Length: 89
Image (cartoon, rainbow, N blue to C red):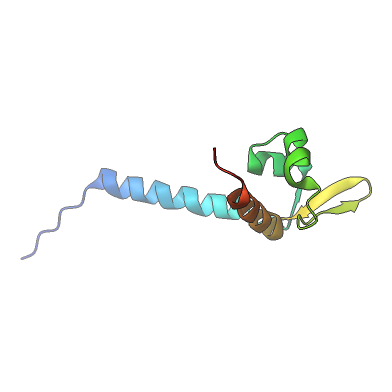
């Protein structure tokens, strides 16, 4: 006979970790971000975003009816590239 012991706390921890990862993935699956979502995703103020990368020609943005929209996946990829280009002090 085989006995298997399972640490329920560890299994719960793994489950919650995976759940959080999947919820974060779902959150980022929206097609477009607006400025409010961009601010939230980058943890930067609107002024900082405009000073740092908003006017970079590589940054994907579209103005519709006076409001800026950013394709989620493209903006995310740009931000990851941009942050790696920044000097580290």
